[in-house]
Length: 212
Length: 320
Image (tube, rainbow over all chains, first blue to last red; front, top):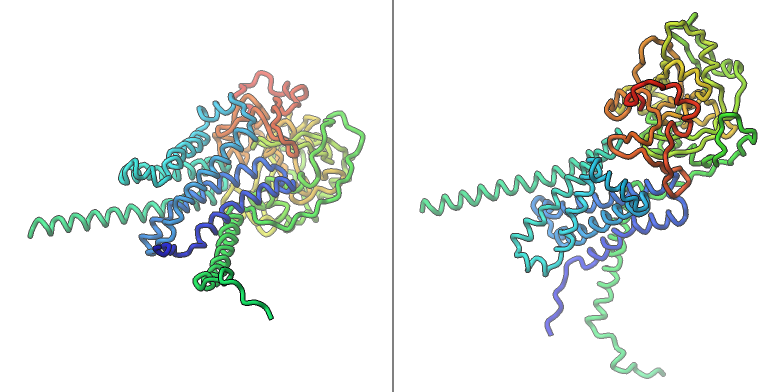
């Protein structure tokens, strides 16, 4: 019998999994205790939305972490982080539709047709849907890695839309959404710089090969 | 003498070694879970905070004035811990935490502009001029939440008459204290400080307009705009300028802080109107603090019978 393949840091993934559920448990606990403050629905909406954005940004940080720092462990967490982004986005969305607006369809329809801040938030959520569905290994095989990878670049679009949704939501104090915009922009920049450099390297190799 | 354990009960060596590793992994797992969980709580502002001691809830006076609603007042703790007062921070819990730096005594109100004789008056003297009354008013924030607050104060009209405005005075402009030492956020450029607001003369003279100096029968807490704040219950809450130091009677419509900050979103009149959405959200419904379901927002916040006539014949587009 072959010895089981040893996974480095076997504690990492289950640890982050449990940690990712802590804010959900904390909010549920505070809601039951009635300690969510004067406007608990608004607090729940804001926290779930922010958590979705945090996990989305965290999942997008995996590749830059490899490129910049040579770390490989973030990539092993990426799928889970992305699925938590989808989880919290779904809870955020469901809280708005079911708890805040009580399925008031005319209002919800007006939201997605008239209010651009709602439109971008809803679009970000919709974009995460195919990514969550195709997050399995089987999907990667079925689509082929190149196509799967191209599809999952939508995560960046969803991230930008989520930040815009956040920016347009706040009345005046845009410091926090700006911070997330900066982090997202920096992560995107790392990838763009890397793509440009590897293309140049490839071109050089091709030039070198053709002159031999 | 105990028997040697049967061979099946002896821990195999790899497992014996694995136990140590298991314990180490369990420790690291716990640290990771606690660390990531704690970081998320901190990032989303959910970290447990020392619970505010609920203040004793004084019973509101039982005699309802002509203009008071009989709706259940919002709890004292919520009225004093859920505030928009950007001079002390933009989070609703910031004012209760940070407004300790405000010194509401001694306090001088100055009256300027188109009046018979400009003057300044100490707030304690001012309080002797007018009998205080209780008014239980609905308060509708432009952010689509609302409260019911038992205010103590005196009609703004009484103060305006005392100022003896000239016939040319068409508006009253109000100004909040400008002192970054007392109001730390005035060091930032978040808004164009000091906060300024204004009313048309007939609005200022309307019996519903109130200068509040207390709530729930107690002196106004700093975070609610001590020592003098405006309450205009048929308008969105941001018209209720806090910690007023100056009244200025003017001929032209004065500038107002939120209309300066977002002219496409906030106007001078800012009358509560469920039919006119904020550009980014609906104003048709509101969440009453302390209630779970939304309720319908009423035109002029339910004070249409009293105030709608003030705006007869005006272009309805200008009213919000």
